[in-house]
Image (tube, rainbow, N blue to C red; front, side, top):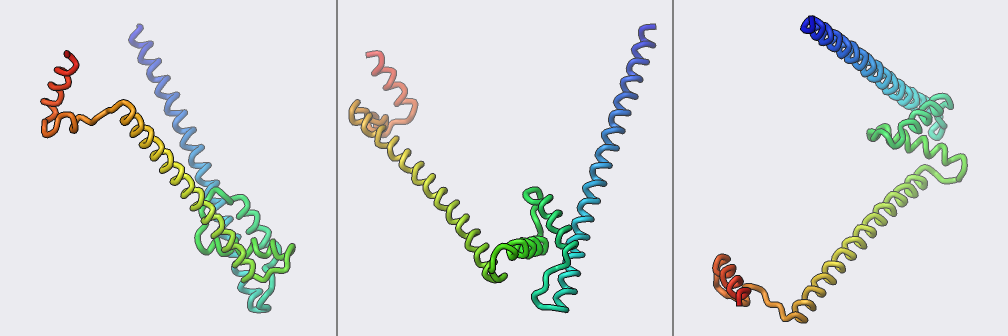
Length: 184
């Protein structure tokens, strides 16, 4: 009777585990499908914007992209900002969109804006390098101070290295000599 009950319990546990695994698989599948849909939407928005840009470029050399495509693209880029690394084409599109957003506030040309952006990027790189050099200099200074402190301690205590005490001896002989010195 107990064996039968334990088998039934084991079967119930196995069914429960299988049901949980199925639910987890369904959730993963739904999540993957939603991520795929979002990726497709983003790609379509970028393609739409690029087509609109190409069409408008045929009409006028300096025309703005149509507003709906621009809005979709900016929303997609804002949503994805910081989460995903953009490809070169996507980054170029993001830069152009950012420029058009900046254009409303300032009177920069696109080339001036790109130069300014490049200067900002180089300034950030220089700042990181300066911080790195400062950290390295600080570490070197700490090492020098610790070496200096050790040297001062050695001079103060008249400490000598084992090789100076016992030249041309192997480790076993040095150990024996140290023990002999300690016994005295």
